[in-house]
Length: 219
Image 1 (cartoon, helix red, strand yellow):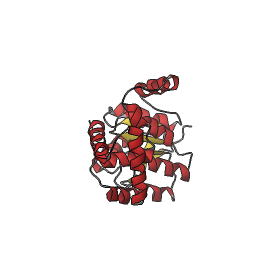
Image 2 (cartoon, rainbow, N blue to C red; image 1 turned 30 degrees about the vertical axis):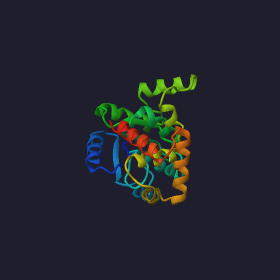
Image 3 (tube, rainbow, N blue to C red; image 1 turned 180 degrees about the horizontal axis):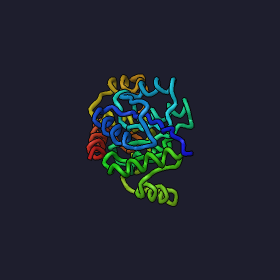
Image 4 (tube, rainbow, N blue to C red; image 1 turned 135 degrees about the vertical axis):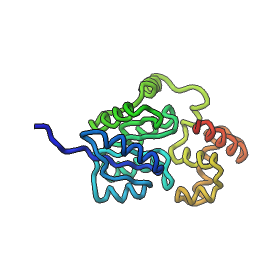
């Protein structure tokens, strides 16, 4: 006989409308159910101390922490839990970082419902899910180095990228330090590393470049 047990899913998303939409979509599936919803990374980590879902759906952008950091924290708690990233941010840049952090799938929020369901079921079955664009990109990168402006940004570590993005959002050094729970001195060090990697001469060029990047990734 076929088991009646449903796969449990934890949704980590700080936008209530998106959480509601995902819940409604998943509630229509016979073999999958929502075990909990978390609007922050901290809430998700607290839940994982008590329960083990079969799948975690994570947004890259959360109010209290970066989604890439959350994925790494989750993997330290339980390396076996499959994670699917559902994000509005460009997959051609963030998917590779998400996979490196420990995610098993990356999908854009703009995708049709049936594609999102396919991604959920694929990752639940412990298989990797990525769009054809990402699969081709990863294969090409394995054959040759990327060319063009994105190489510079791609060279940033996850933490450097977080600092870079926050600069582009208008946060100053002290605010970035508070948001990332770092010292001001550490943030200044990251900023120097970013300037070196992006060949930027001063703080003004750093702010301008970060602002342009932030506008580009939000499109």
